[in-house]
Length: 195
Image 1 (cartoon, rainbow, N blue to C red):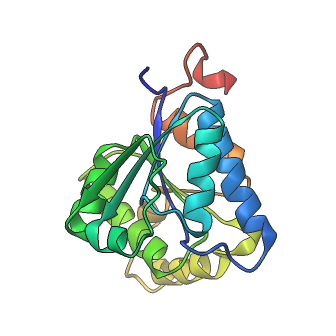
Image 2: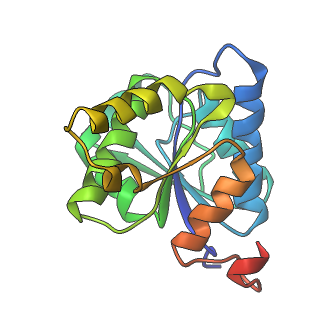
């Protein structure tokens, strides 16, 4: 069965210090799976990555994991994915994840999550894709980053239109709905205004 939509989720390979991070990753996966969606992610079983994947699968969704061979050798791969693609490089990983996605969502995470978010946002502003890019500012996690980005606009190194390419939200379900709507996808049997 073809999924109704496919969302690439970037998030931490650690669970974070507060229970709300893990709870929200679980809620995101449950929403994706519960709306006949597909999760695309980095293929790991640790931290928020493993939580969102397990929740998507438990809710009946498909999960595509893409992981470099080096991380498989460290036994970090989630072998329960619907599809697990093992690639040679990080560049190949990110390209394949982007190709399988209709939209992108960044949850809290570390340097890898930040790097992936900035890259896909850069690709968006350069016109390499037209897929929506979301940032979940959970518990104010990204507030200081957003303040810095606003200062970059004020300093003349960025423009307002670049900031407008990011869909920022604090509620996971509302942000997921927005991303799916902007991507022009809807869960099977539902109109875009019903999800």
